[in-house]
Amino acid sequence: MTAMAFEAAAAGWNGPVLPEWRNTARPEQLPPDGQWLTWAFIAGRGAGKTRSAAEWVNEKAQSSPGVRIALVGRTPADVRDVMIEGESGILAVARENTPVYQSTKRRLTWPNGSTAYAYSAEVPSQLRGPQHHYAWCDEPAAWTDARKGDVLDTAWNNLMLGLRLGSDPRCVATTTPKPVALIRTILGRKSTAVTRGSTYDNLANLAPSFRDEVLTAYEGTRIGRQELLGELLEDVEGALWTVAMIDGDRVGAPPDMSRIVVAVDPSGGDGPHSDEQGIVVAGLGVDGDVYILADRSCKLSPHGWASRAVAAFCEFAADRIIAEVNYGGAMVASTIGQVDSAVPVKVITASRGKVQRAEPVSAAYEKHRIHHVGALAKLEDQMTTWTPQDGTSPDRLDALVWAVTELTGNFGADAWLAWAKRKAGEAQGTQAQETPGTPGITAAGEPQPAQSGEPAGRPAVTDGPEPGTWLVRSSDGQRDYTVTADGRCDCQAGTHGKRCRHVAEAHATADPALLLKLARDAAFRAIR
Ligand SMILES: Nc1ncnc2c1ncn2[C@@H]1O[C@H](COP(=O)(O)OP(=O)(O)O)[C@@H](O)[C@H]1O
Ligand SMILES: [Mg+2]
Image 1: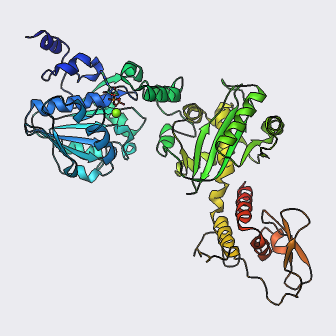
Image 2 (image 1 turned 30 degrees about the horizontal axis):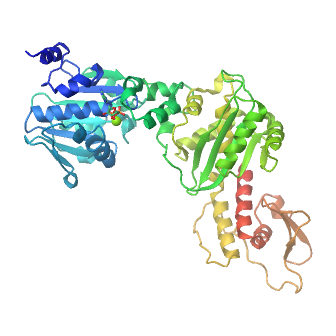
């Protein structure tokens, strides 16, 4: 026995020796000893998971001619770009006897006749039928159906039903863990052998940019224990958000924004971060969803945090900074005014308590209407650990709730906006787009066209006594009603909270862009 083979046997290595990898792999990167069906390598980002499994697949393919191997990733692109062609994928780690990759056939073929097939977990039916000797699942915690667990017709379930060729079928699952049913199931099975690793173990092998990005985002946070250390974090009972709720709708880059706010909560709170100031930037996408763009919270002097808020305002070309009056709103306005008096600060008044404000925000996450752009680990820590019973008021979370509340007013006012847009289009002389069946706009509420036969010489709508108000003549010409930019009118219908034709007519005379902006503002205000 050579020294290396001896070493390998001592470490429980049960395949033929691939010396290069044996020399560089850390123990958790090598398949554990024993009769496992699934080897789960649970580790942080960049810990060397993909590399470990790619090496294992190559070793299996080369040592047993003619075997069939399943490669399952989150999406077709993940399988191709990470598992097969990636920097630590199968082609990169095949030193000799390199397989041929036929992308159109989603197939890798080794010179000895072994084959590997690419499957996307997005299409579980692909895995219904084909049989394999071995399988590699990369990042199953992030698979579309991971929340369902190991139930009928999920990618995992179909794969496992077909994993029955040969006398020793085996599967490796490499993943950063998440508290989803599939991961709990895999880890709970007696047939699973687990190895664990962390980003820190593999720091020396990571590209500096990746290392800095990942460490900056997650170091020192609870979620970092999952993302860097590979710990399975359980959801905090009673918290209004779970990690999965946020993760599922996360995006890498936001779409265009129609409106952006910077929410500031300088309240101090009374939790462990009591001298922090929450500064959260959020926007309303042109798709109507809300995007959490940045968390600029800090622990600075008033001048310091006000400067940060103003910098965020400028960086994101925000519409305004918002702060709640009871939570230092007046102070925010004056402090920001001292840094830059031109920045519009909107001081809002809460009509509901903190929990009542937070709940609809949490519900909007459940409806997949809110997306985090990239990782906002400290904010997400507060979201996923705060419970209404805590009695504390974490600043980042508070700022988030203000920002989302400010923007999600629109969710209930979609109909309002549709109407305003159509009206703006009409005012521009463009073809009005009817949206039949728009909820919230009844035939009765539909703005009526201006009455004909108006006395000549005087337009039906004139500017009102104050900026942003209009005077609209009654249809009998006997009096003027005053309409405001936010859609109130002092006619009988208007004072009963109905939308009357006077509002429609007044707004139709406004500049279309201004009208749209006014309508939006009004819609937001109407909801709150
Ligand atoms: N034991 C090791 N020795 C040298 N380089 C390694 C080792 N393990 C992983 N790497 C390299 O580290 C980088 C990150 O590994 P990768 O497997 O892609 O991480 P993960 O899948 O966990 O995010 C890759 O370039 C990979 O080849
Ligand atoms: Mg990987």
